[in-house]
Image: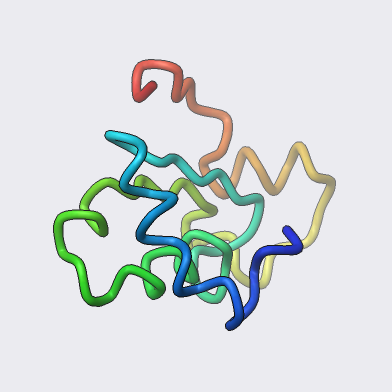
Length: 86
């Protein structure tokens, strides 16, 4: 969780995202209600900026699973090499 993740900071996100060609969020939980979805929501008025967001999060198959962080990352799909996206 980041301190900027609030309603008060949503309006400044288009300016932040505009500085980059891509913004990658990596979340060790589901996409729903995560930081990446909040960031995309904050860009709802700007399709071009929304397209710059790459949100990497657990696949929904992990919902209801219990285990170590390593196990959940494996089941949720976070063990892939994402360096090619940078």
